Length: 126
Image 1 (tube, one colour):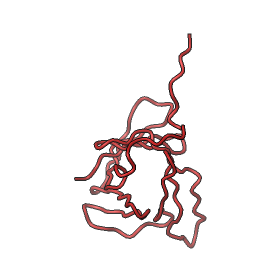
Image 2 (tube, rainbow, N blue to C red; image 1 turned 120 degrees about the vertical axis):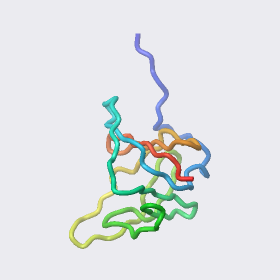
Image 3 (cartoon, rainbow, N blue to C red; image 1 turned 45 degrees about the vertical axis):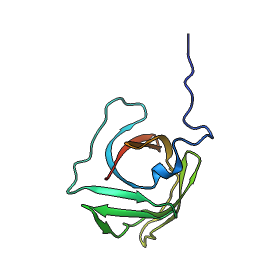
Image 4 (cartoon, helix red, strand yellow; image 1 turned 180 degrees about the horizontal axis):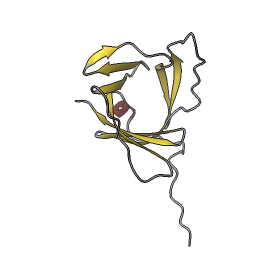
């Protein structure tokens, strides 16, 4: 017998909006169809800050960094979807944001986003 699980793609918002507005560090990621998580091995601690005014701020080891080519710089939250509305222009490539992430989990200790069949988990920077 098949059982149906509630969809995370519904219209009701996950978590209070103000929980999103903080600094988030990537913890791990996996493909939607996989069960094994992978982690990034980086040269520092990178985080992204979602601000209430819709601005995205990028940091490395706590120091604000300029946004990279095609990186989103502005966003809007529409229910469970984060819509990237502006990005840093690039002279050599076309930037395309077809993968606006869906919020799957939003708690004080975890942000989980799904975009383009990849699930990414973030932890807050305190």
